[in-house]
Length: 307
Image (cartoon, rainbow, N blue to C red; front, side, top):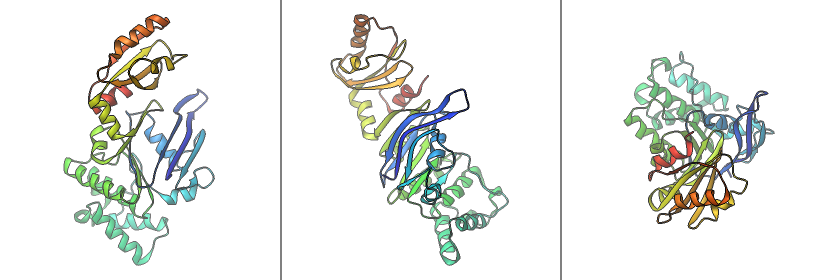
């Protein structure tokens, strides 16, 4: 696996607040995976840990076969990283900055000059290449950050909100850059825009409140939206026997969402709401909410990340 995360936890301070709560996932070589979630869900924290910029509280993280704890420099050499808040030296010219960034990765001479020219062309900075970074719009600064992430030809790309500040034309261009990069690299990029993932990815991971609430091929989410019926059942507290929900007629999947909430998926003809209500009545469970999920990818995202 290019990226392997096992039981990752990040806790801040003595309060015990967990920004990341025992999440696990892996990304194979050549995969482009969208990392979705609302603001504050834990996307950026996860990415900072995977890239070695933030230490985990617990868990195992490997990138390109290297452990983040024991081989942090090898991990950083393997990763091209564009943070959410793109840090740039505004007084530098574009080429000057890219030459500086390349030198940090050991590139020099004609090889570095050629690589800089290729990145400027790839991300569409030809017309702006003679400007200082401080003269650029936010969208073009994003392009500089993306060129920096790709400059040393890393096998793994970690992109945190890479399309922030881009106009519709720039969005299309940068999506194509990500698609092209995904042909020979592993790409994990975060966003809270479902349409962004639909345009680029084959797989999606959705995180909410530090927990993964969905992980699978985009086609499966589409199938859920088109061919399944889905409800979110909310109980007074987490169930001692969640397998009771899985045993309901027609139920194919039960996904715990935390805080007593469960997502149930069944064939479209199944009446899940009635079945859940009868189960609660029979077992003396306190059912405080029961809502059928909207039949769209955006609706699924909202249901998984609300509250």
